[in-house]
Length: 399
Ligand code: NAD
Ligand code: MG
Image (cartoon, rainbow, N blue to C red):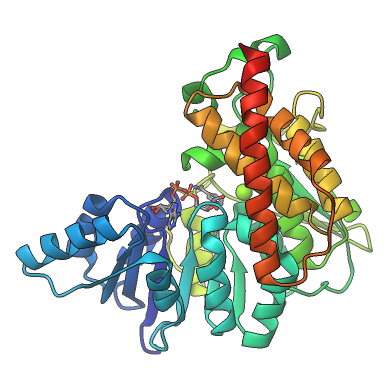
């Protein structure tokens, strides 16, 4: 076998990060950890450093980085600690790195993930928000850097697996007519509509099928997650949004489907276990053990499909509109959603006001054509500032 691949994980203390470490630990001959990183939780990063001995560790927060540095010295470890966004970019672009797992949540992942693409790495993309915000600049960086972009989001990974071998993300695969994105419908798929007003963060993050970080769990409960994924799919597979359909599939066994011109429909199935797409991305085009249980179709019983109800899931409707409208709409949608979800998780905003804050922000900001990555970041900042003000108004209405 070839030399071991050298891997950096952006967001190693998160749900995707921990699953990535689990898969890598099963294949010590194939993968070497180059770097781990987190935002603030340096104690968890310390444990990860001691267990898996990377060359570098990054804590974005400088105080956390100092604390990790001294704890590592005390433990006799020679892991080198970096800090700030510069630290993230350094471990995403270092010449000794082959593969970058982009698993930071939200817009914070944009700069290092694009950096990895520019530097021509294999980019394992979990951080869908960076593609939603900066799709054209991101895909341009992938092409210019000759990076290998492999989707980790289970739906996009499923679609990628259904496309002909040799397919590279960023272009339209021959003969594809439609993409069918499946969604579980989250914890509120069938609860009475009137109850949505008062659901708590704890109820919203209790996903029926997947264990994930808090932000994406709320996004699944509002179905904004599927809206972001619709935009993600358009960029990854070069599809117009009207050729991407969302289907609710409560069992989360069929992870997505591709319909071809001749009427054939291919699907990828598996347990709802992120180690499957992670192992696929790490080993592509080979296959390796992921640690998941064998899929038991008899235990799943029947597989059902239904159309999403946009009254129940207004965030999905907003994302569909933003996807079709393009320009700065997806940036504003994503920024306002991050602000509203954070406020909901902090119990400062009601669940049904999440979509109201996003709609108000989309309505207020004029649509413009993003001209550069800096412009994308400026639009993102402006949308966040407006959404924060809209939060205040939404809270007055609720009180
Ligand atoms: P999480 O909240 O569990 O972990 C987030 C990670 O990002 C942590 O390591 C955290 O330290 C780091 N982070 C947070 N803010 C940061 C900042 N400002 N700067 C640097 N690092 C920061 O999230 P997750 O569930 O692992 O999701 C990560 C990404 O993967 C998201 O974009 C999500 O949409 C996507 N994704 C997750 C799943 C899943 O099953 N969890 C599935 C598909 C896609
Ligand atoms: Mg997904």
